[in-house]
Image (cartoon, rainbow, N blue to C red; front, side):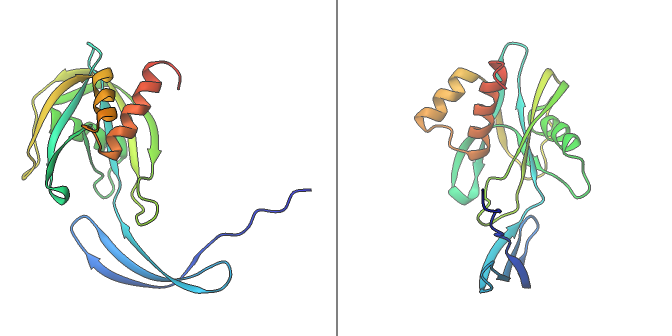
Length: 185
């Protein structure tokens, strides 16, 4: 006879909004643990984002190089972007692909929703495979600067292995793309 699952729920007792930014909001809660004790829980709310795996008819991926201020260096990434309030994730993916890379896609396939920072954020990343690409011309957001380039999946995975691609969302997306393109998922 198996035991019933433990109730691991932590219940908010109070919430303090510590910081409201344009993108992120930081909270400090008092939470009641399953054993009745009260502990502090700090976390960040995030509107969520989409990650696009754009696959050209040639089999190459469309990637971008972008400077990321918190780490003061350039990163090689899959195209991605924040979901605006009330925006459907697929429409966000279509908008971001066009804005950042200049491509539209004829075929879109939802792949997964991943939670990259479960210890301190509610952020979710929604992944799409985009195929049947055609170039329309990029239209970057104000203050957005990046370089778009094409790369084979094999080379991108080698860049992951060598540490040239370290961005979590891109590494996850490239591993996902490998499985999908092999027909394994």
